[in-house]
Amino acid sequence: MRVEKLTLKKIFIIILTAFSFLIVLGALCVPLLAYYHVGISDGFYVLYHKLCVGSSSRCFSINGCAMPLCARCLGLYTGMFLTLMLYLEQIKINKNIYYLMGILGIGEILLEYFNLIFPNIWITLSGGIFTGVFLIAMFLRLEIKFKRDY
Image (cartoon, rainbow, N blue to C red; front, side, top):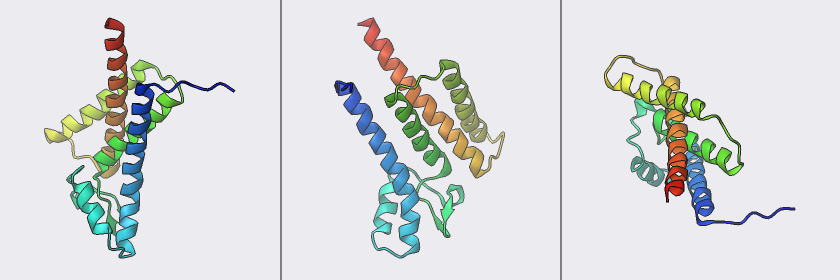
């Protein structure tokens, strides 16, 4: 059995992965807490309001209660989590796929910003996932490039 050496970078990636997972898990659980009238759900909505505006028209709802994150932010954190998990499992994906995801995700955001399209909530979620994957992949690639230059 091979034991991997933990570096500061690996610890940072693990913490970032856990943080993004907890954000997504919490966003899925908070509407259930609100549905069953658990008192701390209001506190979680206030906490998540710091991460996302979360207007109810752009949020998924579970049992009639809106999620605290909008579809785009939910996709963004989900994409971050999935990309970091692939990185920790040392699964390599072609960089052209990351670029394609970045074009699709950022393109959807720009098209909506300039009122050229009016996407539904599922397209907004997928645009957020693509953007999250692209941002984390670029962050990891920039770190590798800077390391090689020094």
